[in-house]
Length: 411
Ligand code: HSE
Image (cartoon, rainbow, N blue to C red; front, side):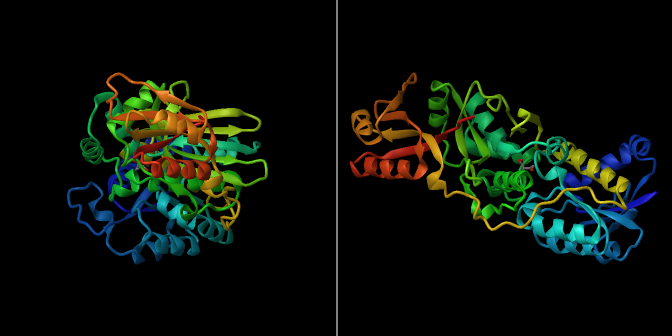
């Protein structure tokens, strides 16, 4: 029997306890030993839980229990998760977490501690919920040099955009629904402002390129400015709008990394990924494109990935799985102004095109049914983002109000 502790009994934590209980026989058959939930840490009371006798409010009960070999951290946030995880690793306990904020902020340090203590620090659930992505990237695709990763990494925003695109639902209404369904973060600003997707692409980039990429180094935009008009112009241009996290290896070895809403062409594999589903494309130099698809949020999908890591830790109590990246300085990331992209522009006024042509050069006007006379939408050719900003400023300075700008995804 291997004793484990679970820190946090929220959406994911209760799912982990549920799977470890309901799938006990299945897991025993795989591991050859029983996984016993010895402690559950939560400040709230759960008197009706079948595991009510295991609850504690005191972290010391876990850290001081020598029988506990694996600790699951599903509290979320950095405080006190960072401190608790560090102490668990230093006490020789393996740690499994779904906490993308923690891994994105402190992954390199925690992986280093795990290495020093000869224990495991696993975080499959931190990216893509129930989709296997960390293990495939660190094991199955290890023979590849990764050229690019692009993904829909946030279930809440994908759910909101899908409802706007398919049902014409307003942003706020769709967000409320996502919160009710348990997809959204405690503070949904992390979802809609793009920070959650940013943490996830940072984790994938760190894993792919071997150096920690910190969220502060990544240009991040959310979906709060996307309107139903933009959604309709995208449709007229043969695209859907998705929040994309993307990292690309450049010829000089630096990386171009971004999180932003993008026009995704209908022919792209990412265009059909809807609702709370996530999709991640990894382009390896040997494999070409490999696409991972599944539920990126929700109780049981995320808990499934956590439990898989628990089983893996239990199988490797005396050995380390090789999952590691070094600390990073951010110097390998290009400034977003240098990132090359085509742009969609929606501007006020019906006589914008000739002026826009003078400023941007070649542009494609988007015509959609019912376009109001009072506005014009067009798409530029590819150019460094910094050059686009200068040209957009020139358009503004010539008296044209720009209503929105969105990147055209090369996906
Ligand atoms: N809030 C996150 C999402 C949960 O919507 O994708 C899973 O990380």
